[in-house]
Length: 227
Ligand code: GDP
Image (cartoon, rainbow, N blue to C red; front, side, top):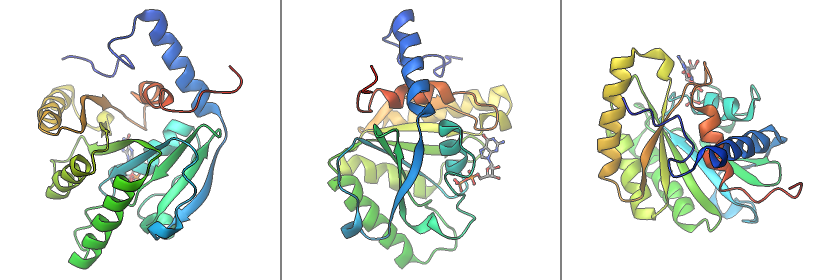
């Protein structure tokens, strides 16, 4: 199977690749702090730094992934926990990049009005946020694509925000299942104009794919003043 987690960017040569990993490592070794929770779009913090937003169905492994990227347990909270979950949570990563934890979507029990509110707020955020560089869209390797995943991909296409699909929990499936899922996901993203044609395969439990994702996101951050 084509291992598309092995390189941060297939156009890089070996030394550039090492440099990309190193800048990812350095960026995510910087302090990362929660600094803002927005329940309304009027409340967003000033757009003064590049931003990457994380989206996915509830339970997809989003808080685990944000915690694995930053190496900080308990930074992002699981959607099972009350509190920060129905808002946009902003984290400041080393003054160089904002990480934005979007509310998990796809609650089976959510009333239609709740879903519509989510979509409206997310669409306005996605379309209007000038500093938003990329959305990281998480899909669970173990679970089939759901209608809400397709809806969110269409929303991202309409908002014209570049997004990167990340498969989570790859440790939880056998290699042939992962291969099939990877192929199905590649076929899915090829139908979406705003989606990157590459998939990141990750596991927050084993750390697979985490350095690659850090490297990809570091290319979007403000340049470090230390360099
Ligand atoms: P969220 O609701 O999207 O924030 O998801 P969580 O991060 O809370 O994870 C949901 C569930 O998936 C929890 O039971 C996690 O332990 C589990 N999980 C998260 N990441 C992984 C992973 O990489 N591998 C495995 N096997 N389980 C994971």
